[in-house]
Amino acid sequence: MRTLTKITTLFFLGLVVLFSFSCKTTTENKADTTTEVTVAPKMKLSLAQWSIHRMIFEDNVDPYTFAQKAHDWGFEGLEYVSALYYKELKAANFSKEAMDHFVEKSNAEAKKYGMTNVLIMVDGQGNLATTDDQERKEAVENHYKWVDAAAAMGCHAIRVNLSGSTDLEIWSPAAVDGLTQLGTYAADKNINVIVENHGGLSSNADYLTAVMAEVNMENVGTLPDFGNFCIRRNDPADYGSGCADEYDRYEGVEKLMKYAKAVSAKSHDFNEAGDEIHSDYYRIMKSVVDAGYTGFVGVEYEGNVHSEEEGILLTRDLLKKIID
Image (cartoon, rainbow, N blue to C red; front, side):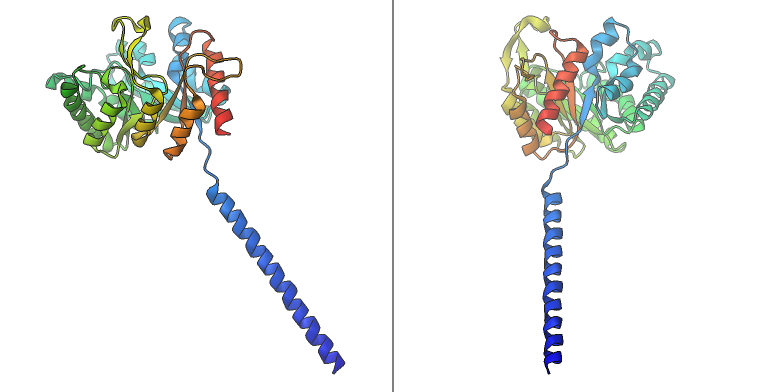
């Protein structure tokens, strides 16, 4: 009887130990799962090629070294600027052969350095919001080759401008029409058409979001730029004349994030602590995160105090500090 009692006791003790181990394992696994779910993916940083425009225009740096420079500076994504290749493309009248060379060379360099092609910023191809119907149609069609190039390079978007009238009642319907035409073509190529607040009425976030709402296309959105909210300059012919009418950048970014498919972290000047003195990056990035955005954040340095490389690295480090 004592032997039976001892065996029974040992049996139940074994069950208790086994049950305790099972409960502990289940609890630990559940905690790990919760941690994985609640940790948001880190944003990646891309480099806007405009950040090295002085190197290219003034120092004759080859624009095709973009991938190498961005890689060496610690970026993962590339945001190309069409105008930085116009010297060769215009000389060839934007022929198919010239565009194919741009695509093939860019792809080869991106692959060589393990970089991701993110988007192409397109300028100088006509005003998408011009009031002249034929001129607007030609501007739309001028962008087709860049949509095709973006698709061939694995980019997700082209960035466009909405230049046109300064009269809202005239500008708005023209902007809607231009974007709808281009968005329709780009949709077949799986490319987004995104508008940057880039001066004029496009720098008024209320006006631009109203255009987005009316266009109402999945592949048409915005590219909020932290520092491009000047609607009208003191002297329209002089970019450095100062801003006469500026939209609040914090309110602007917050509103444009509703339609954002990319983000441009514009920077100019920094203090000794490494913070940008014109934009509170912490405040703006909170709006970016709160909007649920998890794509690339593009560094675009445009200052004059630091060299382009120094400004790029300062902006990169500030963003990494915030993101990390």
